[in-house]
Image 1 (cartoon, rainbow, N blue to C red):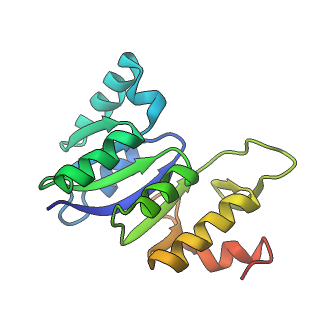
Image 2: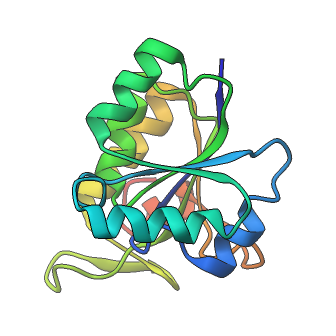
Length: 168
């Protein structure tokens, strides 16, 4: 049975400097990029597989449905991975589906809606819906959720971010 060593939400998915450091985490032997658009676009899939291979780790680019199937049928085989999604929503859906995460790192999400998104850390914009999803995910599944753009940056807790939405 495989293991998800770390879940990461990052709009850029694989970001060279960040991934080179994260894959050095003890036990990591692979990267799962879970993004429907990237997985279904041959050129993009090839680009991300190539970027991930530069880390020296096996890189699997797949859709959300296929990673769920891969979990149901194979429990991720023997892969010990970093699983990356582009959005908080996708990550929370994977946790709710049953993929086991000990920790989720929210790394970089840009502002998409100027009226509803607020800057909660130096690299993360969120709206109240995202905050509610993360809070529910942490409460229901006992997963450690924190905010950290790069491995050398300080960590911000979910609790400190929820205060910005008057939810803590």
